[in-house]
Length: 220
Image 1: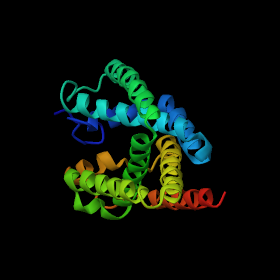
Image 2: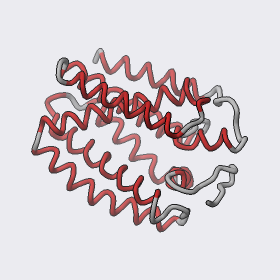
Image 3: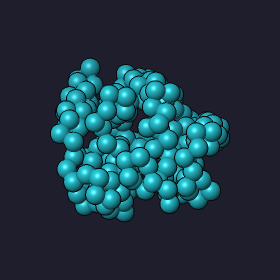
Image 4: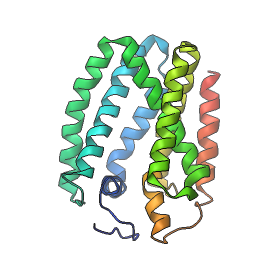
């Protein structure tokens, strides 16, 4: 594996998030735009939300697979853009399919919101477990819990999931360019490599802003 300037091993999915950090001004508008759409588009735009969420989810999965296999040790800028472009094409197809099947699409939409909730709280309070398995297990578990609640509380959980998803994306985009927002996908290796032992205190300002934005969205 390669090592980033911060001393973090870059093999696997870490390489993509190091690429994101290196190109933060280019990807920053995406996080803000995605966050705003998820925050302010209501149930009347459910199909559109399902489509957009499906695009992001499928793209993220393709990126995860590629950077865990073929591009495992690559930090080349052009590789990142090629992977991102190809993943978006696959994501567009997946999003279109989900939009045609509301029930399945709603499941994926809400599960993604729960996954984001898991990432946020793991990063804030459970990061010292320093296990990628724990990070993924906790976040996926929260995502599945949200999806299960969709069966019983469709409208309520849909609002909570999209509000959290939007606020996480928006605040992460701000933190990406402003600094002091450590990616949950990098923090485990940073701790293992001795690059940090405590979360940056300023991260909790982002965390607080995230919760405030989420709470405000629930009452708008």
